Length: 198
Image 1 (spheres, helix red, strand yellow):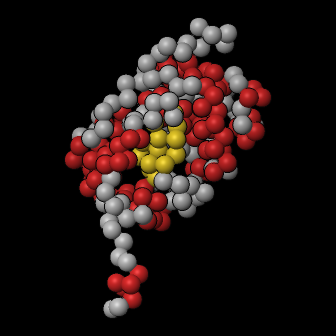
Image 2 (cartoon, rainbow, N blue to C red; image 1 turned 180 degrees about the horizontal axis):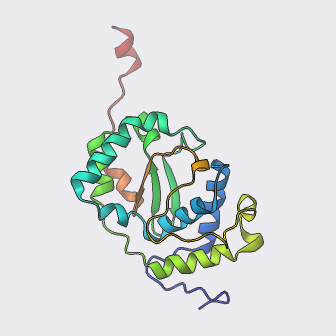
Image 3 (cartoon, rainbow, N blue to C red; image 1 turned 135 degrees about the vertical axis):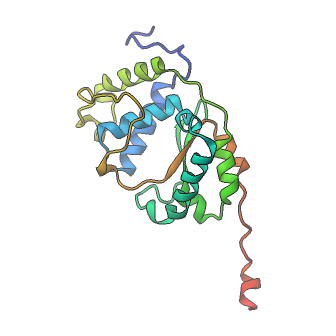
């Protein structure tokens, strides 16, 4: 254990420094960020998309396809132009924002395979509890926007955390390994000269 009593050898453990950077970026892009939103980022960094991989494939595909259809209007925050939001660079865990990928011409079937065909992250609840404890007790190390939140008083949910109402609309999926982005195919844009001749 380190001086803060937080173990770094747990499966899925995320570097504390990177977590602070990810939280700072999240707070900058989401002014309505609440304690539950900060916890959700930590949860996803440690446990990845494993909760999604437990959903029956046909049901997960239907949810993703439906969200894909509305992704262009859902991503209205400062994250609207950010296709990949890194949560844990050491292990490659990231949020894949659907709106930017749809605007870039990503093909849905390849997006589905990249997200739903990924291997499990295999993070542990102990690693999540350990990292959250470290975030809660970070004091002045926290990004300024998070210092005013009652992280200590936040009641950790039994299951999957949800975003707050003030977080704003969002449309993303978590990748346990961002190298899977290379699986996503994109429609070839028409050339300007080809469209000008019509």
